[in-house]
Amino acid sequence: MTIVHREIVEVLQDLPIICAVVHPTTGDTVLVKRGTRGYWPAPRGLHLETFNRRHGVTPQQYEAMLYGSLFGFDVPVADPLNHQRGEEALPVGFEPTTFPARPQT
Image (cartoon, rainbow, N blue to C red; front, side, top):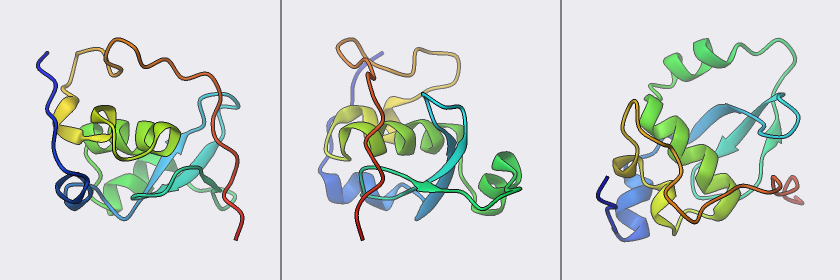
């Protein structure tokens, strides 16, 4: 897989405003926001697939949003162009260790 390197402005234009993802440590459904590290608790009963379908989230955007929330949106793994169906989601060198804490508001 060839890794695409784009400016963060271009990457953010190709991502949804919000996305529901599975927390990699707890398995809970959480919400992540475009351009923001960390996550927010999802409302009780939120169905991940239905939420993402209604928000037009593609599988590539899902992966990019998850890893952008973990590593920041200025890295190649946060670009949906670097995710293709059936291929390894994380390029070599990116191994999630812990999910960032919920941002303080």
